[in-house]
Every structure is written in structure tokens, then in C-alpha cells.
Amino acid sequence: MPLRDDRGAEVGRGDHAVAPLWDGSAVIGVVTCDNLMDGARLDEHRLRLLELYAGTLGHLCSRQGSTEALERSEKRLRLVTDALPVCITYIDADHRYRFLNETGARWFGTSRDKVIRVHVRDVIGAGAYEKLRESLETALAGGDVDMETEITVQTRGQRFVRALFVPDRTVEGSSTGVYSLLLDITHRKQADQARAQLAAIVEASDDAVISTRIDGHILTWNAGAERIFGYHANEAIGRDISILFPAEFDGQFAKLVERFLQGEHIESFETVRNRKDGRSFDASVTVSAHCDNRGPLIGVSAVVRDITDRKRSEKQMARHREQLRSLTSELTLAEERERRSLALNLHDDLGQTLAVAKMRLDLLVDADGPASYEPLRPIVALIDAAHRAVRTLAFQISPPVLHDLGFNAALDWLVDHFKEHHELDITFDGDKRLDPMDERMRVVLFRSVRELLINVAKHA
Image (cartoon, rainbow, N blue to C red; front, side, top):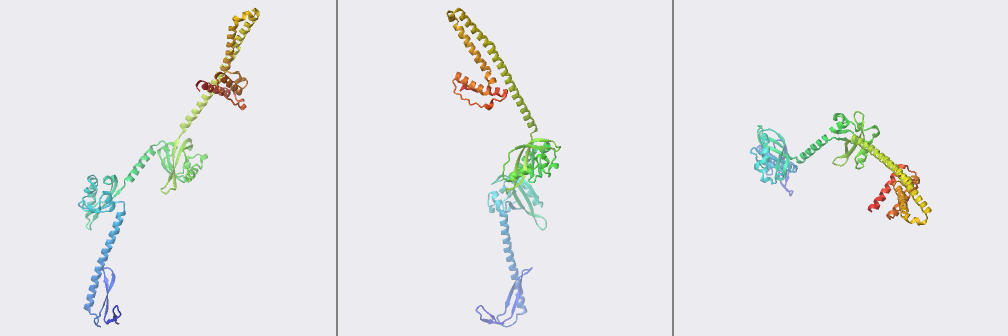
């Protein structure tokens, strides 16, 4: 058939041949050959040259593709290694860096081009190098190394690192270098230390420290829990927390979880718990919620303190206080009885004696006439004053109105007395409902009000 150029003009007739582009493993294309010079067929020599040309071109295309693929692969590898938060290096047999990723450059406070072919010691410092040298030598000898140590990093100070050294082995098995990965595990180490310290504190605590899932199954159980409840850890872990609750507190844990789910903060509270032997005891419980990083509740921890001794002491103190109140009340009543007896004696004995003495003086005056009264006038006045003083003293010691007329009448008298003798402005609004109170309460309240008024009169 006629062959035409790009303008459509016929350029002649000739033979047409096709040869595959072979890269050594697969056909990657074809080469075509057209005889445009004459109509003769392509001879064997020309076909052989075409095959040789196609083979050579195939190998050249294959090498170009491999080179480009290798460059793309290396670029992707560089992107990956630079993005990793790990210092990745390649160290040759002379302990010199041949490769360093971007993270490593930031670690050492330099750029990659300044580290290549530089000795490890000169990059990381003599101290860090001495800690890693033995492991580096082991890897160069063909052994894999995975270690943790603490080194000084120029831009970060003292850091804990995990170092992995993997030998670069040849076909013969010898090592020409080492791939190294340094991972900063300082935060993990600090967290491990903090957890270890916390675990030691929890284990040494006299209180029971327990953690559970939200369904109530026990996850952790410290030595304090063993002492308080009597269960060993292998007996308690995995069981439901309800084994520690008396029957009357069934459902208490579910209510606590519900309150946590509603976002409540639960204050410490006092309750009752059961020991392994079935005995119950008074307990103080502090609970807290465990949430994962996303926020949902995943568990509950509790600190349980046995407060049996404290409760027993509180009950003893309450009994002692009640006994003291009772004793004080009895003493007050006894004192009031003594006061009343003393007031009656003053009124009946001394008061009546003074009254009789005055009456006899009056009889003498009547018998001797008015002229004899003048010498006796001072004596009569003294007797009257003494009689009034005895009556007042008797009222102050134990006002008869308190026992005869009741609490309100006694306070009315007390208010009038302080108004008269101390010029105080006092108002008393009595409550008749107070009068039926028993003698003990009546006496205590009256004495209390009297002491308050005395303090006001003395110090206000």
C-alpha cells in the first residue's frame, strides 16, 4: 500500500517490519521500520540490524526507567524518614555518618550536609558516644542491638532514648555499616517513673485502693484492700464489687456510676462495707471517675478507709458528752437546791430575826414614849436596811418566783431587777409555752440569762 507523509502526499512504496523493545524481562514497546526508498523487501541483514537496534533501545529505556523509579523511591523514602519522629542514621565502619534524616538534624541542632562523613563523637558529644559505642561496635560485628540509655542531646539536654542498631550485611555476611534509630522516650520514662511512684504509694497505703470497670468488675486491688476486706488480689480481681456491699446497699455502685455519667462530682461519704468473713464495718469512701482520652467514662476508682475505731471513739465521746451534760445538769440542780435552801434559811431565820428585833424596838418606843425613839432611830434604820438586804440576797441566790410562778415570771423579775440596779434598757417578750418545761431546763435557762445580763452589766 502507498505510504504518505504528514501532508498526505504519497512518498513511495516499500516493505514494513516491526521489532519488539525488550528490556531483558518484558516487552516495553515496539520499533517499526518502513522501506520508503524502493519497493524491495527488507533483507536479512537489515532485519538483523533492526533487531539489534530494538534490543539496544529497549535496554536504554529500561535503564532510564529504573533510574527514574529509583529516584522516585528514594524521594518517597526521604519524605517518610523525615516525617518520622525518630532520629534515623546510617553509620559506616569508621563510625562516620553517611545518612541523617531531618528529625536527627533537629536533634543535633545542625543540617544534614554538615553531618555527612563526620565522626559520631563529634556530632553527639563524647559522653553520649561512649554510652553508644559498645552497641555500635556490636552491630558492626553483625549483631542486632536494642537498648535504652540516658544521653545528653545538645538541643534537648538530658534525654532517655531507645537505640536500635541494625547491621548492613553484604551477601558474604560481613557488615559494612549500621542503620541506627534513636527514639526519645523521656516522656514515657517519666510517666513510667510517675506510675511506679504512684503504684508504690498505692501499695503502701493503709487504705483500700480499688479500681473497677463501669460494670462493677474489679480491675486492681492493693495490699490495703487485702488487709481491710480479707480477700487476696487473686480472689478479688475479676469479681463484682458487690461482694463488698451489704444487702441494704445493693445498687449503690450503679447509682454512683449514673451520677458520674451525668457529670456530677461526688464528695467523700460514709457507708458500710462487708469483709470476706461476713462482718460489716463502718467505712469512709472517696470515689473518682476514670475517663479515656476522648472523654467517656471507662471505670471508677475508690479509696476505702476503715473508720470503725473512729466511729467507736465518736460514740464513746458522745456518751461522755451526754454523761457530762447530765452531770452538769445534776450539779446545776443540786446547786439550785442548795441556793434555794440557803435563800429560805436567810429569809426564814435571819429575816424573821431582824423582823422580831424591829418589832421589839417598836414596843420599847411605845412603852417609854416618843422621847425615847430618837436614840433608837439609827438602830431601827440599820435593822430595816439589813432586812431589805437579806430579802434581796435571798432573791438573788434563788428567786422564789422561779419555783412558784414559772420561767416567764422569773425573767420578768430579773429584767426589772437589772433595770432598777444597773440602769439598763431591757425588753423581755415572754412565751407562755416555755412555762411547762421541767425544772432542770428551767433552772439552766434562767441561770444562762442571768449570767448574760451580769456580763452585759460588767463589761458593756
